[in-house]
Length: 153
Image (cartoon, rainbow, N blue to C red; front, top):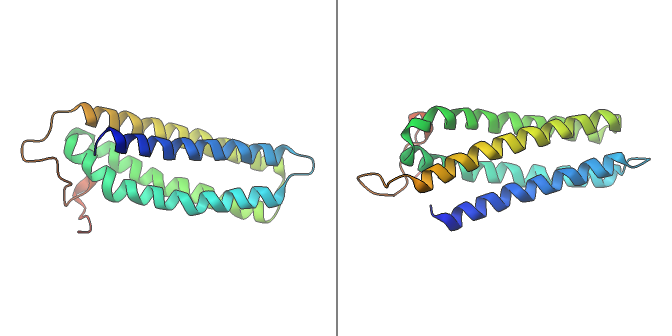
């Protein structure tokens, strides 16, 4: 990984964070823009798992190699990935049923807060890893991810 990779990852985070406020806007209309809400949620639901998988298979193992003391944090971020997807899927189900818009707005705001906090933690780890000295052996990707789990070859 290098600074260009970091820029790509941060741009992905920013794109997601920009999509969510548009959801709030659509939910704030009277009546709510249910078609737009569902479309935006579906788009996020397609993008988010792919982004998280790249982090889990590529970024986190690299971070674990560069910052061995951060393995516990990485394991926590992995668990958080699953919670974020579950939270998004719950919001999608509620939107499909045209759940009251005020409640959905609160849930989307909660998701936004969670995603921003998650992104800040990842950004901090990425910046620290880029500043860390190279490991003695090489800067190649490890074959084990956080917590010693095998990584696909």
